[in-house]
Length: 65
Image (cartoon, rainbow, N blue to C red):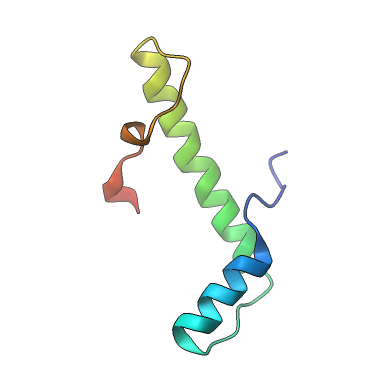
């Protein structure tokens, strides 16, 4: 699962196009998926450290966005 794309590529491309009239390179989805995995791993670790089995929005560090 470490190389699976975690985002909806068509939605990403539409967003970029709508916001900027720019195209999106094919490798952007993989790069964003890698970043998303990293953010999720950190949030999972925080939830576990607090004894929870549910990852919540507060587990994500907004300074990393």
